[in-house]
Image (cartoon, rainbow, N blue to C red; front, side):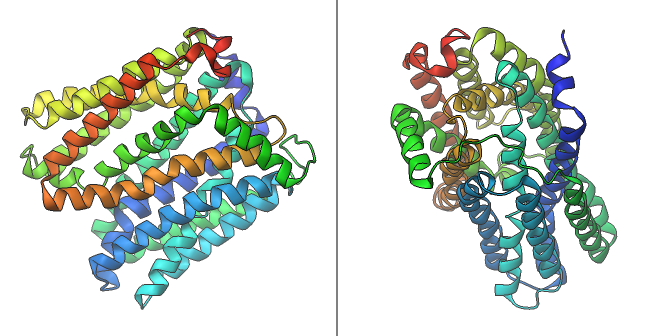
Length: 396
């Protein structure tokens, strides 16, 4: 296997972006999955509705800011944009640590949500067209490792000391901000200086061209978001497994996603994206349904492995396909628009999943999410991928 696309991605300046991306995801994963809930309730004495509002605020600001960040990246230096956003995230973490009233805690979580958007979009704009699937796989590997390592490491520290966990995350946030001063002060995204309205017009034409894909962009993140608030209780109530066994399931799925991203990205570059999307979504949906049948723990581990591999098949193929519609010269704005559209499902999904679980059950939510992914897969079977720009060269 040729490692040239990965070596190209890891050139000296890009390596710094990747380090910052990993640390940002470490903090973000730790905060959203474990820290905000445990620290807010046990140390600050806040109610669960406040914790839920804080997590929602973080998702909302992360999603909403992407459109604005794309606009800024087209006009200001990358260092200025990344530096400012990471400073806001650091301030948000400090605010969370000393929030004595609910609105301060929610505000701090909202500020924390600003951290991911610019560094992620910048990394996307640095990927080369001829090896986009492979390099996307590399970026998603860094993203998943950081997102998974954050809560795992933080949970150990939380068991020892709540205050130490806070200062650890605050120190990492500070480190991210300081590292951003090492970024080049020059404009790194090559753009054409055209009026903002003209850029929006170009993007509007691209969105109209791919309008049939837009529902899928929202539904994919909606289905995933529905699972976030109910998975722990589904594991205990429906699968009858302990917390440690549930952690093993998550670790298995995450590990095989990470291991599969780069190979799946290479294969998508070579054979085209269509069947990776079709197969990945289909397998993901079927396995979710099979989990509602209450399999024994050993079989559940196997299903977690399959889920990880199918997720790895979908991620680089889908994002490489979207990349074909980012207008040349407006990369920051383009990725901001697409990320915002995708993020809508992630914002709505957790609330929908929580409501359905309350009215029906956790197993119903898992089954509905599975049916949603199967429907998306069937749609892509009949979608004319040969007419899409991203597939003309790669083959459908």
